[in-house]
Length: 285
Image (cartoon, rainbow, N blue to C red):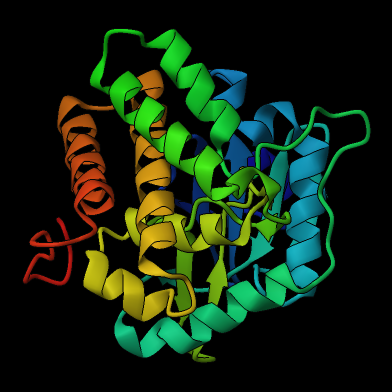
């Protein structure tokens, strides 16, 4: 990537590796240029785990859409041939606190009310609430705990009519590493829009809550317009999806175990109506 930068007039840059599950992410430091970031695909992982490598044009378009809304770092250059995205620096990953809830609710609302439509022509019907995914998980894991939970969620989801909820644009993976805070301008941004798409609105809130390890008390404080039963269901749904994603990716055993503990917590919330399961601590891990 140094050669790629040199071809664009940035010689002798220093690349500092940043976090990233399925992409290579580097902070670009140069004595004569502002800080910037390079995102490059890891073409060694399966296509479903690295959209930047296998659906590059779509990822570029979505990022550009949200950058124009002020929700993602601005694009300096997007190289379709290599899959490299060169972005303006927009801060570092930073834990969210309750003081940040209003700003993040506003960011999510801005996206969901933007009118952006990321449905692809000719694509299969979107699985906005994850019900089709639950059917697939149940069929593919007939003897696992995942099947038991998938069956239970599917039954509840169908009875509550989640399949008919309207679709809105969502990031879909607002884990702590994807939430950037830029101290110099006191602003938040979201990075890694690779898994963005059209989902029900509740999916976005559940993704952020589960990936940040919040308990039901923090969850309700953040998603304050979603009732407890629906919120618990969507958090359990996303927790199961996240656990299975890490199983498929063959993540470290301790990571998978941690994800499963979160699945069990949210299913306890679903099954018991959150009675006697509220943890005293702010986060589950």
